[in-house]
Length: 205
Image (cartoon, rainbow, N blue to C red; front, side, top):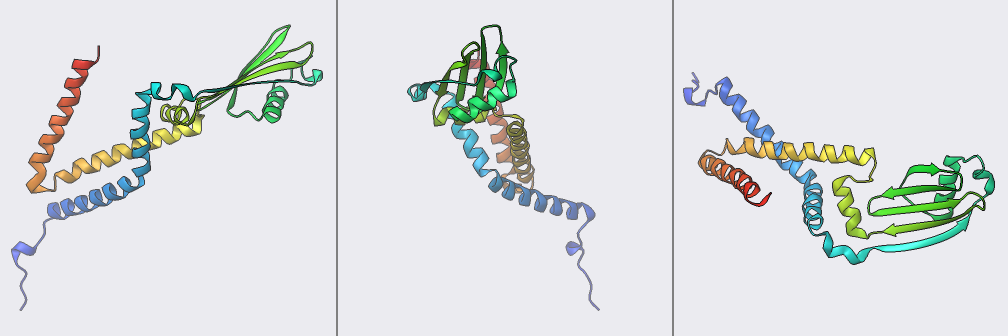
């Protein structure tokens, strides 16, 4: 007759702990790998945002001139005016406010690290477009901040924040299952948190 040792019988609590540890480990590993590019992007751009003076000479300003059909201007068709400027001058970014008065029309385009501002003379159709490109790192910094990126990119930033939160929480959960390192790990986490608070109190006015 085969008997089962009491030591080999797992209680429901032990089974739950084992499953929790397994799920937390799986999530932590694969979320970390999935978030690798996200973590790297926000880490690097966090540094470049803090030192924007490194890239002050990267700005490039271009002035373009042209003329558009007068029929677009007498009774201003804002959509067609925007598309005309976009197609003829190959500007990018989202169109901002279009302002119209008796003598002129002004409009702007905004994108990450980019802007283009047009002034149109209504009587003649002549216009001047000033395009400013701030360089690669300005684009990266604006993507980090979600500035002039549109709603879809902001949703992506939100999703990234959720994923990184899950990576942190699953890592914290895992430390509770590493019995020999749990105390040391939690102590280091507490010290790190207190150090961040201390640095804030010391360095932030």
